[in-house]
Length: 286
Image 1 (tube, helix red, strand yellow):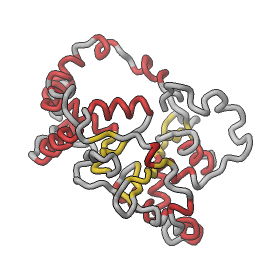
Image 2: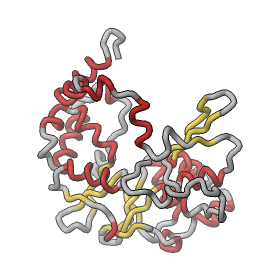
Image 3: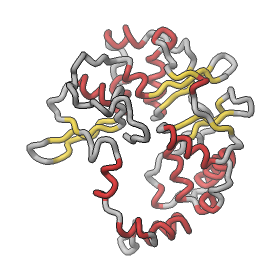
Image 4: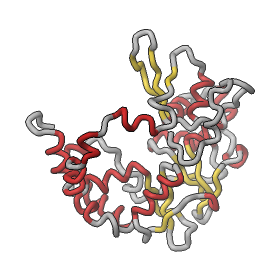
């Protein structure tokens, strides 16, 4: 980004009318970080220290629904590192070949009671649904992604994640039609946007949408947990859909599901620290 161009000017150029409205709003002009950090369940965040146990880390990333953990040095008053669910899965992928890992990870998904979330429990959208419906469902249900299904409702033909909402904000044509564009046309327009080299400076570090390769990354219930871990790590995705021999949806396996299978919380491990917040209060956010 050129140092002679201000942040707001760049944003307006990238996103058209949406960003013009945003930067002229009182919210943009007056809101401070301290105004919003209390809206999250762990405000401002729940830190780890290097002396905390591996079990503590895995429990927070699974049962207690953390996606990101900050490792802090209280003495120095600084953040030393960040640990994510994806990092935990990558660590498992690096354990391939170790005896303890092979003993557990060579079991089939069905042997470990996967998928935890079955097909009839999945939140789905049809390709002709408005794309706003997909993002609203993710927000309402507190999920990071959902399958796009064909007219039968049984076959996944794509996946859309909450991070794909960025293209509604940064692609002028999509923002213009955001109230009416379907999931299918949203996918096609984003593909066109990126293939034509229209990705602006502000989007260079954005992750590629999970549906742009035109394929749904999937697995079978007779695949091993090792196979699934390697797929999740290789493709840098947060969920994988389980399908049968007809490629009908059977369920989904998430990073959290896999981490949860590795740990058991001893009675009283966290004392009363989480009383009142587990299970999650209605409308809470992590």
